[in-house]
Length: 194
Image (tube, rainbow, N blue to C red):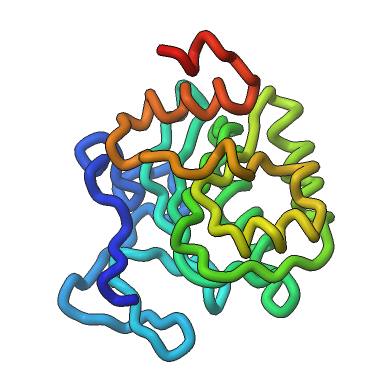
């Protein structure tokens, strides 16, 4: 797992550790020392720890004018034991919504397991963003992870599923990716054809 590095091609547009509004502002990274682990596996030092024992994040892009953030995740999302949704909501999402971010895209391809529990934080999150015409979209969710999310009834609060998978987001500019997500969420066929 140590060679799974957060996406870095948008660093010319945004760096979370240099953004005063980011929950990761001021973080420093040691590129030569691997100290963070998921279970017994070292992970790349660029991932940000924000509380959960098995889930790490990287804010790849935040646009406060358009109210959009793209966040890549790595590890296991476990609401049963660690209440990871609380950590995501309180330590990342709430801080960004405080600064006007209401559209969230979470890149989930490196989330290897999901264990759902109650949906109270998801409902609160949905209420927070939908009041501002926002959304939460999970892209490239692995099939077994999506199944567990569905079993937990999270489709009422989050956008995920087949239409949000197999998206080649790495070749996109973040602004174009936001437009694509909005088109998928709102079913805007004209935007999808462009």
